[in-house]
Length: 539
Image (tube, rainbow, N blue to C red):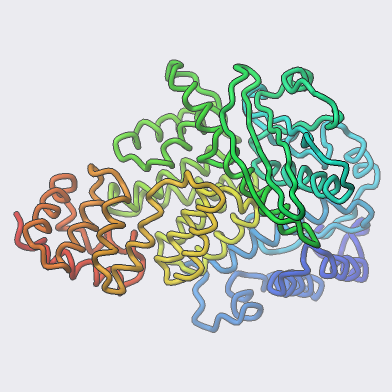
């Protein structure tokens, strides 16, 4: 209930006590801004000033954004409201002994205060279908026999207690990181690692499609892991790799290094599981696709950003959403495509951007822990010139899953574009360390850095290896570089290729270039190169 005028509502003291518990919790320990936000709206409500809880007042009084703050143009308050709701949900999903619940209903910043029903909490705890230790049972909406992985204990463990403990911790880290890919269904086994275990029999017991297993070899402090992912359906190996490291004290850094790379290489958008399943999908008719199959087409498109297949993938997602209107992931993926359509200049004005924003908001409403939804919001903020909103939503997407290299690399590229060059390049380096299969479009960031530094030969090398030759952005970047290098014949050829693929660019370049390069200085430098290449003198 809102306010304190109902007998069945918590008293002001009870609400203040609950606020204190929230502010001291682990969920809120790292964010002073969210603490201030929550404190402000609770205090204002208790003081009877609920009508003052508007985005403008929050921006001025809590975030110190100044009297000229415009909530319609600046998404700071909306971004933090999404994060605050998520933190509250996270807190109450893991704390069941509290008496009072504080919520912020969507569509408003006015909090509600209610008593928590002990019987409802007990029922939730005892319901096996709502096991908090395995949220995938609630959210997994694909084929249970396809996106499912059995994680085996390590084999070949020497009689070394410290190494045994290290590998136990590593197995737990693998399961934890894989769990962040909510589309995966995970299984573990109680099989004795000292025995010769039939992994296919173990997979059959639980119905897992893929089996992740590994062995370890030790020489002093030096460790080598041999990892493999096999397909329980075909008994074929779809991925193998080795990882070296030194066992230190404490071991957590090495466990994290091993687990993060293993998980990214098998489970992320460009990982072995998605590539294997997509190859199978291509052999099937393109009709009546389920959620998982539609997602596979999106992941494959995201790897290439192929202009020719754009309309096909967009149609697949649209049809799948009609059949599955409550899938946050599908809506977020379609939002990403509309954002890209606008960025590429295939939509000159803002209708695609508005539709992308609508889909991203719907995805967040359905599941505010969907990493794709936060990325879609970040991307939309970028395209609208909202740097702060882009950065905030990007950090939230990476907090939900830092091992999805598609999102990590995409954010890294755009961080460079908004001027956070060091942070963006570090993200791209992390993405490549996690999974060397990150597509070559990430090199656009290096192109921009070299180009702005006047390192045109290096920029040209990047431009030659970014995207396919039939992509107009490739010809645009090459034309700008050749113009700066005063190689006018080659520059003119690239401009002609650009205009043949995109005749409207000459007229609308002032609208399109900021969508890609963001900063005014970068846009001017690119246009300088294009003008040297003869853009204004070619009919």
